Image (cartoon, rainbow, N blue to C red; front, side, top):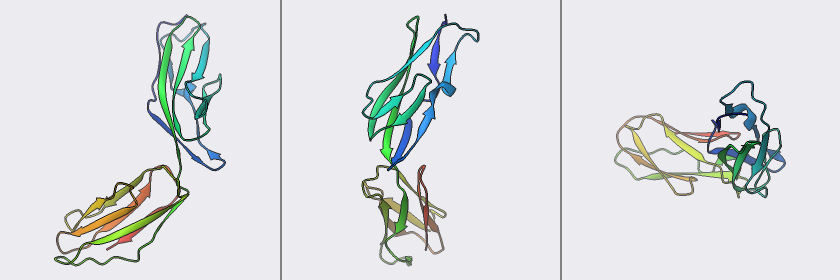
Length: 171
């Protein structure tokens, strides 16, 4: 028997893009307080519509949603983690052309498109020189308002967390 168990990886995000579905082996993150334990483990998902788990601890995605993955010992100890699945962005591209913003001039926008359109992935906007321009990103993450602050140059980069492709926008 074992005294305690835990899963060290928490709040897991796994992507789906058509037939491309991410998996994770949670047995790699299972911590047992005894090395020579004789207990057995049973893995389960609170919602197999979204997330399935094999008896070896391999988690796979079905469709967008959240489930609690649990591992329970024969002696009744349980450890859990949350797994959220989302639609991965396959590619992103810039809809607007190069944007030149003049200090003291008007505010401009950069618009990004993502494929597939129903993606629920996260876009991350970064600015190489925040003293030159400020970025205000819209709620959907696809439109950035560029506000000039001083003379100079900056590179605004939009990347997709855990997906293929980046779009760089130079000013």
